[in-house]
Each structure stands twice: as structure tokens, then as C-alpha cells.
Image (tube, rainbow, N blue to C red):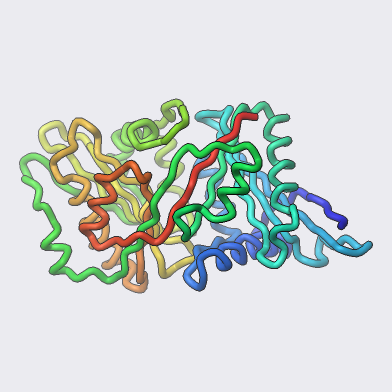
Length: 340
């Protein structure tokens, strides 16, 4: 077998770029079925600058015969990305990789992963993270693959889905009705108000340490108003709604939750980060935030038919809140780490 790995520059509408996401999406559909999460090139290009990441894309071409296609010929059989953080935890890198379902179990994933590990080691990275999603609680073949390549399990996340719409009566019954003299919930669509940004920076810093991270040490992320503005208030193909809770006596934001809708999957929203500061927990603020955000999502995006969220399996409180809202388990995601 002949094979070759090339680095690609992803560009909107580029044939190789579309082939790259095509391999990723084919692997996703083979794993999850018709409702699989898929990506677009535009979304991939949008993520890196907003998250202060340096991403590199790679593709592997293979042939059983003498001819090796690529560069405009046959599509690649496997693709990967390396992810290096530019501001925080710069010695820790990420990698993601997918093999087309018609070409799996032929060593292509191993070749790409080893290539990415070598590049990250040469770049000075000390450790690497990978993750694998599965509808199977055991992790299926992805678990065996990670262990065979020297990775250790650091955390397991539970995927939960909520079918929409949720009736107004149901949301009203779940709404904890906060004391307005103590806490109020505010909601913004697409862009965050300028007056939120300083407090949102603090919440983002705390999110990096307060949220469960499993068996891995990460430094607190450095956030300021400008970094929040760059991530949330620059034009993006990704639609977002965020609700925050304000502590009235101090005037400070003490919790937030986000929902996004990606262009590749416009009928399914994704519940991303949710945090209530430890010193304000026990007041039903997480439930109040999620109820408010679901109301806003259904009002602004009535065509969305489901919401997906992920939580560490140790985060039993947040999972319980999701269950009260009607979320049901649909899969698992495992985080893996390896010292380079």
C-alpha cells in the first residue's frame, strides 16, 4: 500500500477543503447515524481565531496500486487537525482525527496520529489531548485505539439530548422564580452587551478551573474584556444566545450559560458552557439560567428541533438539572491524554 500525508490550507469553497470536511462528516454519520453532528469549512475557519488557537489540517491519501491520488484527484481517506493554544496552557496541545468509514481498520488513523504527535513534539508541546465520542458506553473501538497508542483516560462526558419545543407551561413550572431583590437573569442574542464583558471575563477564568477537568492539571486561563469581545462579538457563522444571572446587591454577574447553533447542523442547537460561581451555588441559579436560555432559543430559532449538551459524568448536579428539563442520555465522550 502506498500512502502520503499532506498539510492543507482550508479555504471556503476549496475542493480539498470540502473533501477534508467530507471525510470527517462521513465518519460522524457512520458513528451516529442520520442525526450525526457535521461540520462546514466556514465553521472550522471561524473557530481558531475566536479561541486563540493555531490549527493545522492534514489529509492522508492511500492506494492499493501504484498510483497515489491527491491534490485534486481522489478524496483523502483520513484527516486530522492539530490544535495549539496561543494564550493558555501552551505546552498542552490537542488533536482530532477521522478515517472515512470505507477505509477504517487499515492503519490510516495510526499513521495520521503518529504524524501529528511528531509535529507537536517538535513544536515543544509536552502533552497531547484527544477525545472520542461514541453512542456506546464502553467507547467501542476508539477506546482500544487510544489505549494501544499510549493514551490514558482523563475524563468521561455524558451526552444528553432535549427534544424541542418544550411547552411554555413546562418551562414555567420548572422556573425557580428567583427573588428579584437577590438575583435577576438577563439574556443576549449573538453579541454580548459591553457592560457584561468585564464580569464575563471573570466567569470565563473561573470556568477554566471550577468546571470538572478530570485527571489532568491545567492552568487557569487568562481572560479579559477584549478576549471575551473577540470570542463573542466578532462576526461569525455560528449563532449564539447567552443568559447571565446578576447578583443584585453587588451588581456583578455570577453565572452564565450558552447555546449555539452551527451552520452545519442548523436544526440542532448545542448547549455549551454553564457556570455558577461556587459562592452563589445552592440558589437554583443554574436551572433559572437554562430555562431562560431555552425560552430565548425557542423564540429566536423556532426551526431548531433538539438541543445537545455534554457534561462530565462526575457533574451529577448539572446532569440532574438537565434531566429535570427533559434531557435524555444519548452517548458518551472520552478525553484522553498522552505525555510526549
